[in-house]
Amino acid sequence: MNIVVVSGSMRTDAQSLKVSKWLSDHLQTLEAESSVVDLHELKLPLFDVGETEAPNADKILSALDAADGVVFVSPEWNGMMSHSIMNMQHFVDKQLAHKPVMLVGVSAGRGGTYPIAQMRSAGYKNNQYFVSPEALLVQDVNGIMNSHSPEEGSPDESVQTRADYALKVLVEYAKASQGVRSSGVIDHETFANGV
Figure 1 (tube, rainbow, N blue to C red):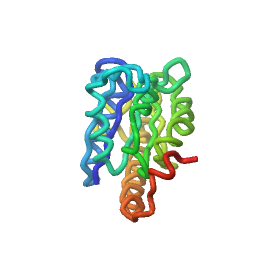
Figure 2: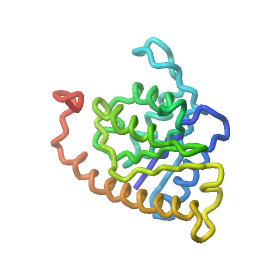
Figure 3: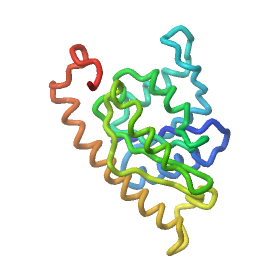
Figure 4: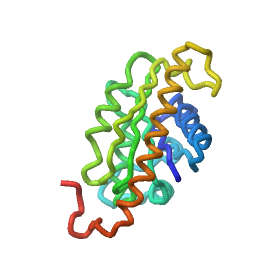
């Protein structure tokens, strides 16, 4: 089982990247292969219907194509999801089709819900992925997920327990959807998008 974690921050050494690395490390304890794709590092250009060369697009597309499931980690920017995740989705064709995606909203304060809501409604139609019902909200992120041994009873322990549960659910959805993708029912030529 291969789960790719996509870090959507636009900053070097971002808190969202820290959360992404924690999630990827934890997935490996659940006996899943996992890697992190850092959109800040890839620096995809603004999508413009193929008129701009995007040499790093192949890196994310091949990672997503090989994935059985994906985690999108977005910081909240001005009450919105990361524009890098939205931009990445424009480069994606069928690499995410019929695969589960877990959504994670990150905030240095008490935000993070807006990115989850936006990611839930944006992108899945043409990319044809489905959203896991289990999302993760990481608030006050500076003090969260700095280790894998949180203090008992702390907010960090609560977030990590929720992360563990949501990742376990994602892995099971990833296993279950393999049969759908290999069934022969999927027809991308006739039905190029989800509606």
